[in-house]
Amino acid sequence: MQTKMWIPENPSDPKDASIQEAARLLNHQEVVAFPTETVYGLGADATNEKAVSGIFEAKGRPSDNPLIVHVSNREQVDLMVNHIPDVAYSLMEAFWPGPLTLIMESNGAAASNVTAGLSTIGIRMPNHPLALALLEATGKPLAAPSANRSGRPSPTKADHVKQDLDGRVAGILDGGTTGVGLESTVLDCTSDVPVILRPGGITKEQLEEVLPHVAIDPALAGSESDKPKSPGMKYTHYAPESPLWLVEGEDDFFIEQLEQLKRDGQRVGVIASHELAGKLDHAPVIRCGSRDQLSEVAVKLYDALREFKRSEVDIILTEAFSEKGVGAAVMNRLRKAAVQVVSED
Ligand code: TXA
Ligand code: MG
Image 1 (tube, rainbow, N blue to C red):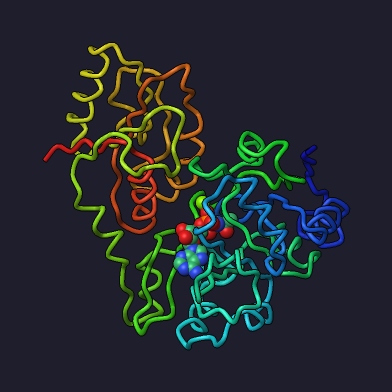
Image 2 (tube, rainbow, N blue to C red):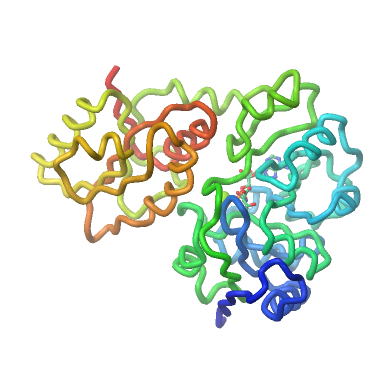
């Protein structure tokens, strides 16, 4: 399959010629990648089972992993859920369009493979003019997971999508680099106290400004306390080409780990904050922003993970960041991407 690449002239206009062409393909059960404010998504008509199966095929995604449905208006939400809980109304009001996915009871209107057989459905309204224009032009809610091959870091640039999916999808709409850099927060609104299933662009602190109580899925908290992981353990998410080691501790401890690996003859690539990078006498190092600006780290993280090639480095070493604010999402992704967590204590 030939993959079309479009750079729309009028990215916020549903009548733009490229957006119209992409919408036509989507309405013919094809899959098309498009930018959102978080990462690029791989879209298909959420009401059409055949179209949605194209997403799983192109990504090589296990069929038991449900997809997020993207909408451009509230009516599309009404069409897909049994009822909208009060908390969900407040959250839509506060954070939509934006990086917050709300899990609600599905009414079965979405294709069954969207929800992977669950009784619930995840929905969000993306805060990106091109995504919204495409949704308007298509006139349908779009199921869209991140537009990477399953297991790889999510794409924050059209070129990342091309690296993973060229020849496997009908087209890619190029809207430049995405803003947040990490995926949306997934929040389960079906219980009395909403539960964060995946930390993301809307932080727990922001949710707490709107909700009296927010819980965190125990599965997330659990992985936090786990100490050194054995190589290869269940980590097939966000994986860079070379194995990633996450170093938790002071800068001196990081430097010791780096020096030891070099003495062992390993070619090491480093991902570090400006603060740590400034103390290193080493190359290659990718600087991913300041420790005091974790939103900057979020924007650069996936690009950094894609940067190091297997032919150039044997191991990628990254520092651990604070878990405040969007740092919770950054650390969640790093823990999943890492084959080894090296801790000072
Ligand atoms: O920012 C994002 O959310 C991006 C952009 C493209 O919108 N999308 C994204 O989709 O990250 P994906 O498929 O890579 O991740 C969706 C996550 C998965 O962890 C999935 O298990 C969860 O959302 N999810 C979807 N529907 C769910 C449901 N009904 N119940 C529980 N989890 C669900
Ligand atoms: Mg994903």
